[in-house]
Length: 184
Image (tube, rainbow, N blue to C red; front, side, top):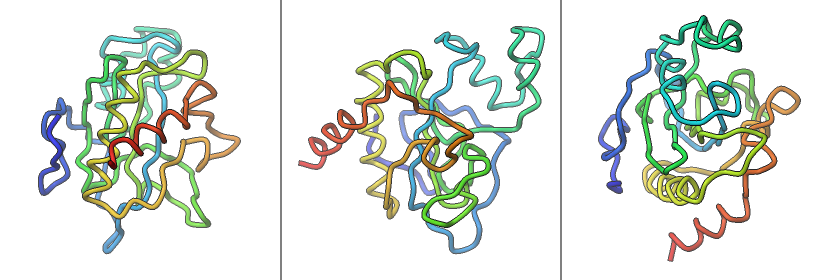
């Protein structure tokens, strides 16, 4: 993975899958927050293209019973980190991805306006894989070089009571150690 973002905020080396579920950030709004999410489609199953189909509005509601309830959602994230550590990018960092929904951080609502959303392929019921943490730490390091990031939070932190991800198996201490190693 290259250490650079282009002028629009596309990461060199990431697989690009443009999502229509994005928009302009408010004028003068800087990226200051990274939000970590977890997603698996179908729930608790990994691999396949259904996350990509959800983020590009192509999810077939007949493909799985769960999809009937979510296929019409218009959501996205900037990045998805697969179990093997591969990174897909759906929205350039210069735009607002629709990942946080109803949310608030330090008294400011609408976290999509000032955050970058990173989905990890995972769930609340199983640990994340080592390559995901390594890719996440590298990606956060790159983002910190380009944006005045003040905090890294989970979706549950900005939407308490509504969201639980990245869930109880996400190892925040391990991520902190990797970030510290990358800074030296």
